[in-house]
Length: 199
Image 1 (tube, rainbow, N blue to C red):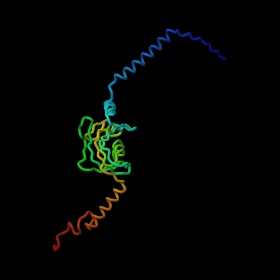
Image 2: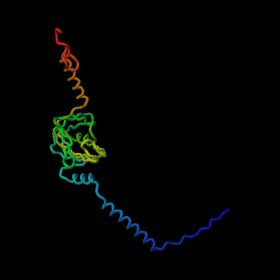
Image 3: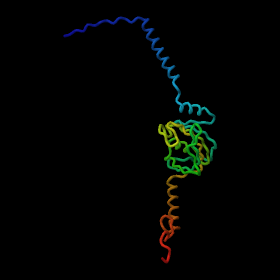
Image 4: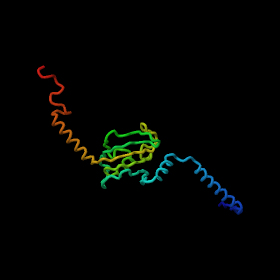
């Protein structure tokens, strides 16, 4: 049977403990100072400054918006709707990267998450300005003229919206009417494209 000899530990002097705690406090203060000296993320800085502007509201997701014209009624689009909008998209430096030339249909569920969330806030006839942070837009991927990690700013006018199923039904009815009026598929009248009569 083996026996273990216990070696008593010497008590630590109070002065050593004080120096140890002072050292820990200095390290913590240094870490805080370094964190404050680190350059701020430009996206975070921009959005924080923008959020402080009068009339700008920020949602839980981080989408920011401002109501330019309130519109009418309480009805708002849902994920199953197609919105008819006029819009202009800009970068934070003022460069326009996209602009509608005419009223444009947009499926609510078929656009970037921030734009979809924004459209679902709008009643018919309203005009809003949106600021979409990168995680709700294109993230860290460059897309066409949009650099990676860009905040997107949109001015949007919501003209109308319809359920997607209703829109499809209307398109089918329009195609059927064109086929009935034209007689042949594709809207060509019967005999179009063939040799002239008598030849």
